[in-house]
Image 1 (cartoon, rainbow, N blue to C red):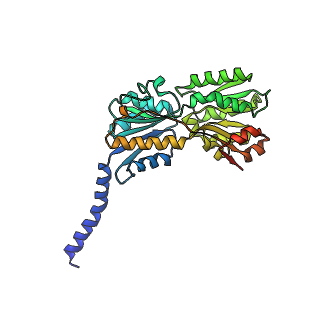
Image 2 (cartoon, one colour):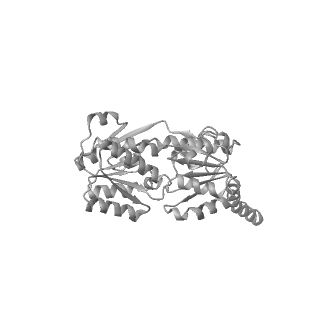
Image 3 (spheres, helix red, strand yellow):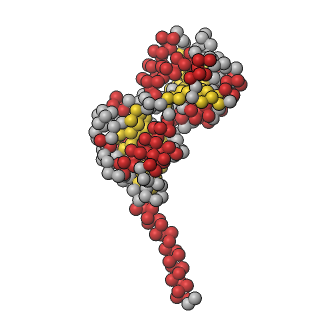
Length: 319
């Protein structure tokens, strides 16, 4: 090979990474902001159904935080990128993104009523630049507590933990307290805003000899499943959760909406917006599937016995 051909070949080889990088930079951006470090596979599946794959025809810019105080800076950072769509997980995140831009399309995943929060004008016709999926977990708190009432001893005081940073915290507390009053149960309200607060909540449960813990539905709590399950096992406390990931990780029981279905729908909506549709015209999707997951191995270690009628309702029993 002639020297000049060899040098030309080297130049062409070196150009490949640059060309690939330039191609990546030219792809439309989907910005993802959440408390969880993992990108939900179900969301990616929804994107795929809409004809999009990361690295091929779309690029993901992901930011995560477990500290609500960091949200404004992270949102500003993402808005500067001028993404085609922003995926906002949790009510606090959606509100922060909405406050930062009225033009970039936003697809949210929340557990509260988006109309009450002021995110959309109505569920059927959102208007503005936001749409998404709601699990309505806030409304489920009373039903979850009633299920817990059927399992834990009647005389015990139930500890209930809510995220102090959740915009729906007051409504969650009201629903939990109303359900407790109607069931004749005593409730000890605890609040947490960070990892240390969660540790302290379990210390309080041990010190006050509270019999069990009800964890309110919350995206931040969902990102701390390992911490919750570890502390529950160490303190031998029966804990009731809202997400199946907790029970799968060793938690006692979970009851809530199918999060995978929500993430998939968000992925589909992101794809439809990338294809030119407007958030204003895409109705907010409400959860319709609920699942009860029971971990019998954990129940045995805690000495908890599930009533037959509760076991019969379980969608998944982990043995």
